[in-house]
Length: 98
Image (cartoon, rainbow, N blue to C red):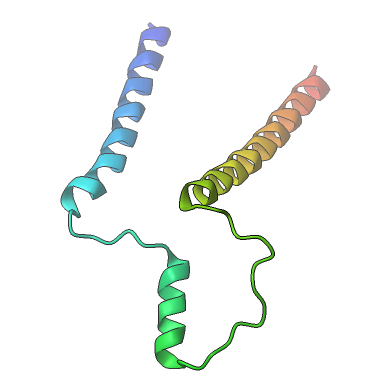
């Protein structure tokens, strides 16, 4: 009985995640999903048109897709490190308990 309840809970959570992902895309059709960097740059340029940045990027990715890929890889690496640490600490605690 417990395993059946666990399966339904997983399906319910998965459905909730899908709804949370699809809802903004369906009901915000005209929304602009621009990043905060671009909006901040436009606001700075509007407030002070002669502003010069203090420094520039060392390397500029050749395309937006590669920039997105690097961003996703950075997030995945961070999630992997956090997940490894949490798993390690849980294993350490369970070993200490035994």
